[in-house]
Amino acid sequence: MSFAATARDGILGTLRAPDLRREALNYGKLMSGTLGRMGLQALYFFVLANALSLAELGLFASAAAVGLMLASFSGLGFGGLAFRAAAGRPRLLGRYLGAYFAGLCLTLPLGLALALPVWLALFQAAMPLTAFAAILLVEMGIWRSLEVLAQAQTGLGRYGASSLILTLGASIRAAGAVLLAMTGGGLDAWVAIYFVTNLLALAVVWYFLRPAARLRLRLRLLRARLRDGLMFAVSYFALNAQGQVDKVIVLSLADARLAGIYAIASRLVEFTALPLRSFYTLYTRRLIGEGRRIRNAVRRIFAMEAAILGISTLGFLVLVAILWRWPGLLGANIASAVPLLALMLAVPAFRNLLEFHGELYFVGGRMTARAIVAVGLVVLGSGALALLLWSTQDITRVGLWLNAIYAGLY
Image (cartoon, rainbow, N blue to C red; front, side, top):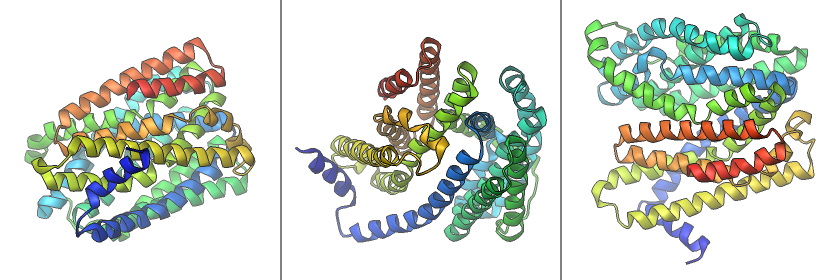
């Protein structure tokens, strides 16, 4: 069977039937919301990547990565439980949101304390502690709270409000990056703008778009569901760390400039996954609906893998070809990452395949296995990247070996 036939069989095997049109419309609805945010995220990234120097971008991306990993534990995991409450028992949403914000008061200072040794080891000479703390507060508290409010609206079935929350946040972030480019400030100026714009986004969302639920703190609920919240936080941390810890490793073992180039390359690779994630949502929901009656499951999964491999590689090749032909199209800093991108042709496909298999664990309800696999991938991937950077920091060898690392993880 040809590649095209295999991919077609896997996709249509999931969507074929009288509801094909409905599934296509659902995908269109998901993509319509995603495309707007993609455009804003792209604007934010491209403007910021050229407003800061490569070294400043590497420092900011690494500090934000630390904050994003710590944000997994924000609110003791009750943000995820609030989504489940909104979907199943909406009258309890106010209590779960109350537990989240109470947990946030504990996890914010604890997270800052845990991050202090990281600042001393990696950032002390290049970034003030106040700037590092401001970035962490945005990721752990401000942006994470905005995400929790969006997820609560989704659980309540208010998809328009949820999409508007995330779009509004992305818009204000992009406006901040444009302001930085217009004023010509450096990293210190950007950290101040970043903090203020994210705080503004949360304030607007809280005033106009928060769920209509009165916050209530019930210590009995907090104690009864604490274990579930922490297990969710551990699983979320493991999945989150897969895409963030590598930036910190590059900064610690190389220099800030290479960290900036790597951050640009990683972000461009991540863009190839955005259109696929909407399809993952439909695919996994259909598998959940079929349950044990899944027909030709192995064949369909292989076909989906073939489709993901082809779409990821083709999309990335087009992006690299455009940037290779017109290297200055997106600015000088992004142009500096093109040589690395051109050597990472297999990385997007394998990263997207790993994410797809994480979704399959979710379909099967194997959350513990999902967390264990995610932690294992983080440990193996981090170790392999560290060994690579210890042996060489030549960009050509790094790019080529990244393909082998992700192939090995897959």
